[in-house]
Image (cartoon, rainbow, N blue to C red; front, side):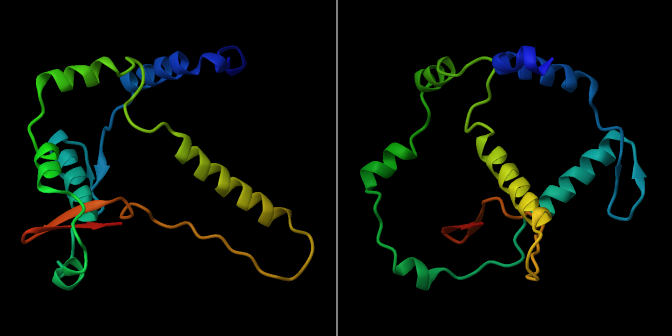
Length: 160
């Protein structure tokens, strides 16, 4: 099937994803104490608790010393333009530029690049036949590696 539909991947993937979304659902989750929860409200609470905990800061840091060394590049006029309310015409134009079967934003290429790098690394390690040099790979938990913004006083802290 892939050989026949591979060149038409946008419609193929969209149809596949739409079909999967219709039949996939979360019927239950384990809570923080290891108990199975099947009630919809409990499932929502588990999800909110998990994502709230991974994106929550443990402590705020005083930025004064660092921020005093940064010279602003955004002028007050630029800032006024950037913080202005959206106009209906701007939103409409943005919607008109979006393809109906594609998601906005970057495609999955960066994800696939990472998968390919990981595959090639494992292939190289598994294929080594000479030498006694030890090699190792690490699988890191990247759930906290996404950018987040923390508000502290008048400043926003951006972390990776």
